[in-house]
Length: 405
Ligand code: SR1
Ligand code: MG
Image 1 (cartoon, rainbow, N blue to C red):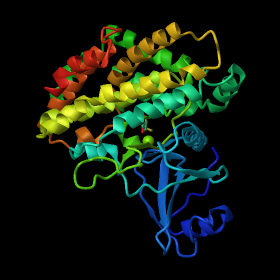
Image 2 (cartoon, helix red, strand yellow; image 1 turned 135 degrees about the vertical axis):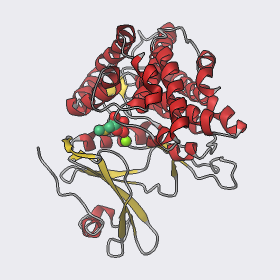
Image 3 (cartoon, rainbow, N blue to C red; image 1 turned 30 degrees about the vertical axis):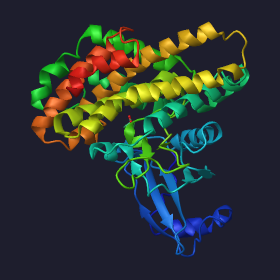
Image 4 (cartoon, rainbow, N blue to C red; image 1 turned 135 degrees about the horizontal axis):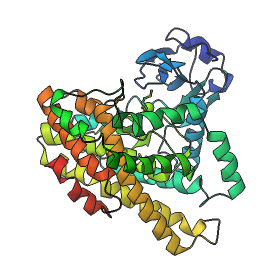
C-alpha cells in the first residue's frame, strides 16, 4: 500500500509555502498549525497566519486513527474531493469552501470552520440549531438530484459511478453498519444491562430486513452520497445570544467529511442522519431537562424531510429524462422514505453496540447509557423491520415515542 508523507504541526508551514496557489489565502511564512481532527481516517490541521487568515488541511491516514493495525486506503481523499466539489456546485454554502486537492499528498484544503461547532457536541449540550435539519435536507436533495439520472445524462452518471467506486471504503460501511451488529463480532460491545435487547437483534427475521437494506445500499447507485452523514459530520454556527439562530445570510449547517462518498441510494444519507437524531433523542430522554430542546429535536425528522422533498420537487421540472413522470416522483419519494426509516434503524443500532460508538451515549453514566441504548435498540428494531408501515414523518415521530418518552 502506498503511504504518503504525513504532515505534522511543524511541517504545515513549509507545505503551505510550497503551494503558490494558496498564497492569496494565507501567509505561509507566519502560519502556525494545530491538529484538530477527531475523525477515524484523517488528520485535520487548522493553519492561521499572523493576520488571522486561516485554512484547514485534511490529509488521509493510511490506518484507522483508533487502531493503527487496521490499514485503510488513502484514496478516500478522492471521495472527499468529489463530494466537496459536488456540494460546492449543487448546494453552495452547505459544505466547507473547497480550495483543491493535492492528489500526491492525499490532502484537500478547505475553509476553516473552527469557529463553528460539530453538531453532535451542540446536541449533547442541548443547544437548538434552528434550520440545521432543513439545511441537511436541502444538501441531500441537491446531491440526490444533480448527481443522479434525474439531473444528468446516463453516460455521465455511469462514468461518475465508475470513478466513485472504492470497494475498500464501501466494505467498512457494509461490515460496520449492515453485518457486524447482527452477529458475534469482536468489534461489538455493550453494557450487561442491554444484553437482552442486543440478543433480540440476532434473529433471522431482523437479518432479512437488514439484508434488504444492505442489498439496496450495494446495488442502487442512484446518486453521489455523502456516505457518512451523521451529526459528527455537520457543523452548525455557534449561537450568539443563546437563540441558536444562524445569522442573516449564514447557512444553518455545513456538512463535511465526504470521504465515504460514492454512488448509492439517496435514502442512505437521510437514514444515517435520522439515526443520529434518534440517538440524540435517546440521550435527551434520559439526561435532558429542556422541553423546548426536546420538542425541537423531535421535529427534526419532518424539518429535514420537508426540505429534502421540497428540494427534489423544485428541481423536478429540470429532469433530463422525459420518462421520469410526476407519478414516478411520488413512487420514488415513497421508496426513499421507506428505506430511510430502515437506514435510521441500522445506524442507531451500530452506533449503540458496534465499533464506531458516539459521544451522545458514551458520555452518559452507565445506568443512563443502558437505558438509552435499550430504548434505541428496541425502537431501531421496529424501524428496521417496519417494511413501509411508517409512512410519514408523523408516523415516525409516534414510532419513536418509546425513545423520547
Ligand atoms: C473505520 S471508520 C469507522 C466509522 O467511522 C466513520 O465515521 C464511519 O462512520 C465509519 O463507519
Ligand atoms: Mg467522518
